[in-house]
Structure formats: structure tokens, C-alpha cells
Image 1 (tube, helix red, strand yellow):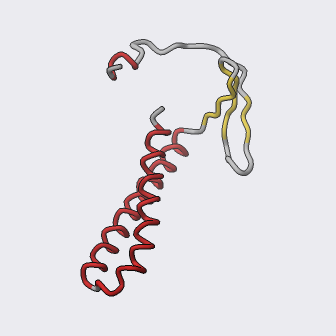
Image 2: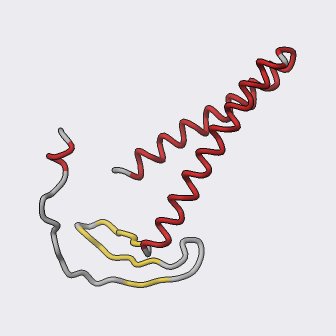
Length: 105
């Protein structure tokens, strides 16, 4: 399926009963039912802030990964220990990819 096929030309407008909630763990949000599934909506500023923080976190993981590779290159004797940490950053990078896929579903 091409991208153009998956995007509706016109948005669908419906009226729904919406419940506004606050409190932990999700903070301010609205919930409603749509086609038998509970939906959760957040204020745009909150979503933007969370997305920005996630991007910063992913960037930090990438920089740590690069630093670890440089460490191994400078001190090959430390490679075994550094490789363990490097494997963890690799797992974090995979989770970042999964996050991107989940976000765009």
C-alpha cells in the first residue's frame, strides 16, 4: 500500500462522549470509546513535549554508542567489558526503532 492510499483525503467528524481525567500515571487526558476500543487523547503540548524528550533520549543513546566504539578502538584491552555495555545500547536502539513504528501506526 502506498502512503497516498493510506491517508484519507477528508477527515471523519463524529461526536463522542468524552471523559476528561487527571492523575497518575498518565496525567491530563481525555478518554472515549470508538468502534469498541477505548481511546486516550492528550493535549498537543504534552504530546509534543514527550516526543521531543524521546528524540533527545534516542540521540543520547546514539552518542553513548559512538563513544563506546571509540573507547574500544583506543583501549582494545577493555573490549570485553565495553562490548557488554555496547550490547545494551544496541538493545536500546532497537527499542527506539520499535517506538517509532508504534508511534506511526
